[in-house]
Image: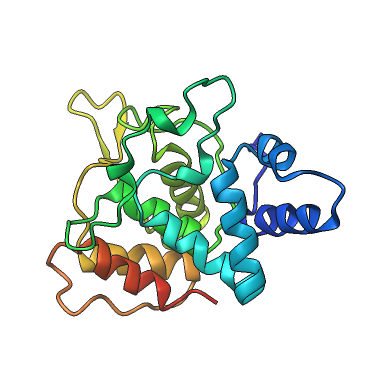
Amino acid sequence: MPWKTVDLMDEKLRFVHLARSGRFTITELCQDFGITRKTGHKYLQRYLEHGASGLQELSLLGAVAGPDIDDYSTAGNPKGLGTLEMNAYRFRPNEPITMGEFSQMTVNGLQIPLSITASHFIDVPRGHPAYKYIETLYDYSTQSKQPFFDFEPSEDFVATLAHPDKKVNGAQAAKILSGLLKKSTPAWHTPNANLSRGEAAQLVYQHVK
C-alpha cells in the first residue's frame, strides 16, 4: 500500500492560513509542521509579498539550496539549527548537480506529490537526504508508459542502484522533466555536458506554473 502523499504547496498554504487566523502562535505552528520559526516567518513574508505564487517559488529556491532545510525539525534536538553546517544550504550555482539534488529540485520545484511505495535502492536507504525524492521519481517512472528514471543492478545483481551522487547531464534532466510533465522538454544547450546547479534551476523554473 503506498504511503500517504503530501502536497508541499498545500502544506505551505495551510500553514499560512492557520498563522493568519490568529488562533495559534508561530511557535506552536512551526512545532506542529516540523519546521523552524525562521522558515515559518519566511513563508508568511513571501505570502504577504507575492501571494500563493511566492510560496511556489520558495519551494524551488529551497530545493536548490542543498539539503531540504524545510524538513529539518528541532524537536528532540536541544541545539537546534546550531548543529547544522549552514554552508551546506548555500546555492553554489556553478557546481555540478547530482541525481539526488536534481530529484529534490524537480519534486519540490514542480510541486510533485510525494509517492513512496517501498525502498528500492541500496544506495538510497531510508534516512538518505534524497530518499523521498528519488523514490518518488521511481514511482512515477514505473507508472509511466515511457519510464524516465534510470537505475541499474548492483554488481551481484541482487539489488538496484540509483547513484544519487552521480552528476546529471542535460539529456538526463530533460528525460526526467518530460516524464513528469508528460510532454516533450528540450534538453539544455549542451545535452551531453553535466548540468550545473544554476543551469538545472533555470531548466526546472521554466516549467513552474
